Length: 296
Image 1 (spheres, rainbow, N blue to C red):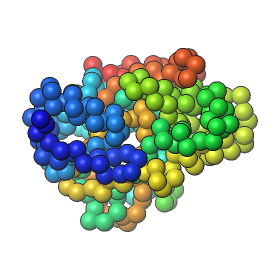
Image 2 (image 1 turned 45 degrees about the horizontal axis):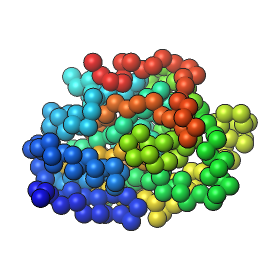
Image 3 (image 1 turned 180 degrees about the horizontal axis):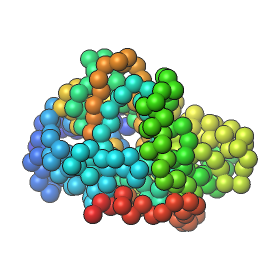
Image 4 (image 1 turned 180 degrees about the vertical axis):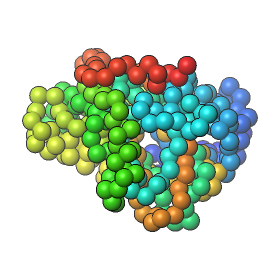
């Protein structure tokens, strides 16, 4: 018997966990919770109202934690917590998987709602495994053989205005340049599922020109972000979300005007992605981000 319910919230991914205080999770219950994350890929816990310590403790159940970010400073006195604040002009309204430009992207990401707008400001999460299975056979066979270069050196933040704040953010974000070649189709290390491992940081295809790369990536990305493949998290104050960063993408629509939106992110250290042929990702530029994965 379990002490909580897992209620499916989306046709292809996403579930709400009801009746569970994440501060009090026994090992047997956590095993069920982890299995639910692997199945549903994104879990929502309503009204948890955690503080920093509580979010860190919850995330650490899934494995060693990373630092906040390879280049962006952490929250004050919290080296493992990244502030995700919707400041005007630097909102990350772009489909992506967290920090794929490094050699070992995070295994999982947790987000905690601190201040959420009364409307808008949702988080959209997409299932890259069902995106892969939706591909026509010839396109799936092509994707199996492709590798993409992921980098933080591009306009990740889509600004409303080219203001000083946005320019400073880009300067910090690209203070160290990372370029990593990852398989376009990643094999999930726990479930064996295949998923399209692309998103915004994937800027080129190995062996193709810039124009050809963009055409191929846009075609594949279309399958990731088809409406039936997306779960929408409608934030309420105190909510907690965890998603499997190895087989999802996410997006925060810029649809809440000048209202405040403050989240906190804690990520779990991941492993080196592996393609269908067993080859591992490789660094092209930058270090192994040892200061990021995992945190000391």
